[in-house]
Image 1 (cartoon, chains in turn brown, green):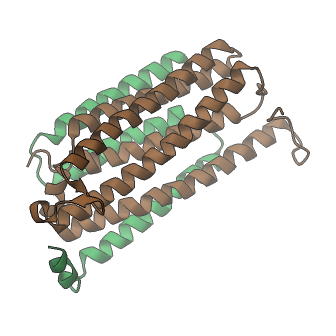
Image 2: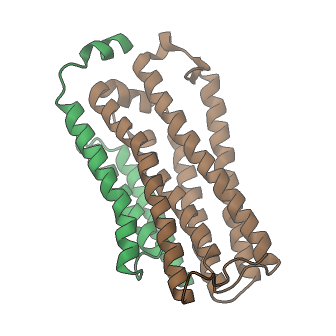
Image 3: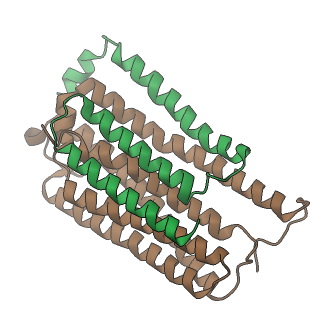
Length: 211
Length: 97
């Protein structure tokens, strides 16, 4: 199976490329609203609970969050390099950049797992083990938001890692058409997951640090 | 985008990450949220325009890309405006507290 060949409904490869790009952005717009609903909930909680909600955010591990943001931004730069070298007609370089992208994605997941584990030990996981007597109900709501938002983000990242790995293998075997959009489209998905984190990071980790 | 451009964009993103993390520890009061969101939007724009190549894309692709964020603004803006001006939610909140 080779993908990306001009399919019958398109007159030119330019038209196909534009249609594929538009389709991907339409999908990403639904993803913006998917994560956006969570972000809207965050703002409403912040309006309702004010200082108590922000105080709960203070219990997150800002060092883990900052390192993970750097890891994810770097992975996006690797992805951009993969697309860049691939479009320049090279084969080995994009495979290496994609490998770097996937490994950084895995590093993010590993750091996040350690963070989850520490939070579990501190009895901060709602529905499983949350010490309401010690932290209060508002903190439980914050951590419910925290685990939903970062968990869904991590799920998206795992899907991204799978796609990038698949892509690296196929490019390595020379089974992806150079004129096609596969590499670019998977790149768009990866960068989008990065953008979600760019917004989650200040809302979760940076709220109330100076207080 | 060229390798050099990727490197420059990455450096800018790292710089903004350092800036936003540093500023979070400076007591800015009510401006805190605004400052961190402005930096987040700047970072997102760098990724959208450069890494996701919206710079140089056709107008139609840009409109598709902007549409999701536009609806998000409506959703966040209107729900926040609603909850900010409600006075009948106190009982539920007091129960949680």
